[in-house]
Image (cartoon, rainbow, N blue to C red; front, side, top):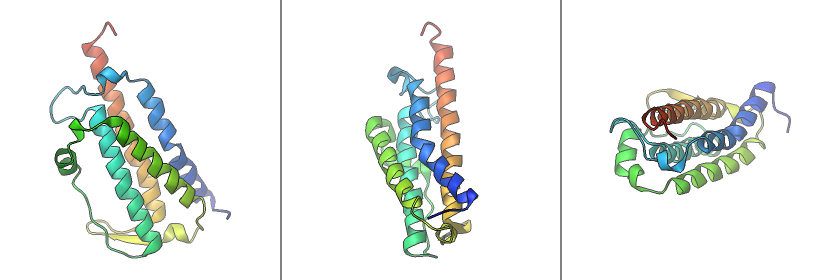
Length: 164
């Protein structure tokens, strides 16, 4: 199925997310994945769990838009999830594997959609109707924010460990 240029770009950018995250992580020694300068900042371990859970929410929203157009969805409190789902205590590799698996499966789904399907919506309690196109684009906005966060952790860690 041939998509318009906007939707082709959305799918291509979405497909690149796992590679972009892996490239950023490759710059970060594993020994610094627990590092944070203040308790309220997230470590890389915690960021990875957040990314996996956020991706789970995003792909579920996309699936609701496609499977039950107009369906209501829930917002989620990322701080509560981080605390209550014990991000700081769980293995980051598992979160990374989940993020990549969700992304790969969703990319395969997106590549089969029509332009009309990218316009299907879900109903967010605060933001109102959200299209599949919006949700896919927001995944990239969200990832960029956390790639920058990982870059900040790395910079802070290097400042505190200049011999590394």
